[in-house]
Image 1: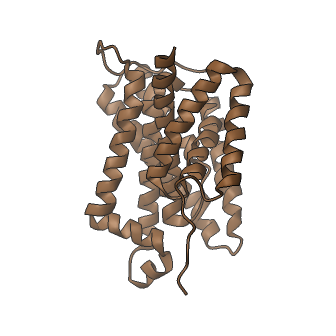
Image 2: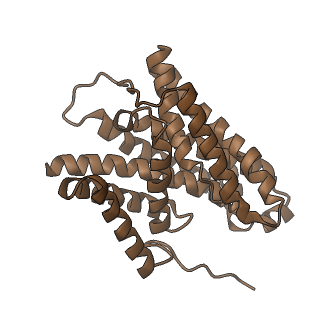
Image 3: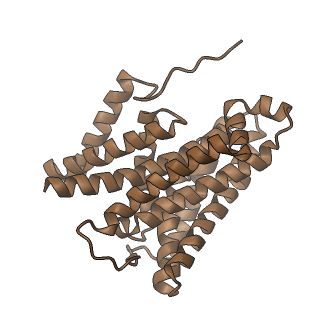
Length: 284
């Protein structure tokens, strides 16, 4: 039983961490907290099942197309729900615009796909003691963390991403193409979100209702790990997954969710900046 709680908790925690990273990547480029992150995760699972199970495509082709679909949806989010709001003085309206877009995509998926959970195909025929539905999310999370570190630290594009994340006004003054970089960042976030849903497809299934669940539980590691802190998001996501599975075993049902959000509120009351966050200081 303990082994089941740990393996499931780590796998689910990695999915939550990937959604949290999706939040962070979109936020760092635009200072907009987009509520389409969970929808991107849902789309990854639905597209993976569509391309591989229904259309019979090879796993590699279905995987790449699912990531491409997530990237396109990320770009649509930037163009439709973020860019118009950034031109307005009332930038808090992005909460409504991104949430409205997420709800529209969720309902469209329910109509065109199904309102019932659909099976996700088994990706590899590998006989092992540790099932792929557990190690695939862990592998995806590790790959994203390493990939982002290499991108941000070793490439010029990554340095440009960090520049607009630090101060978009100064980056614009230096001649960096802020709009193009923001769009590329949303495309990257879309691919990461789709990867979360694809890697966790065997656990979560292809289900339109995964969108709000991932949106809420993906937000928790962001808040606990510190806004924009991907490493903190991974640690908080793993802790969240383990705690949630332990609560499911001990109390089960709706009480597990109550326990999760009770601890979440207590932690934020004690450390509003998050467990790994730091108080931001602005030079004047």
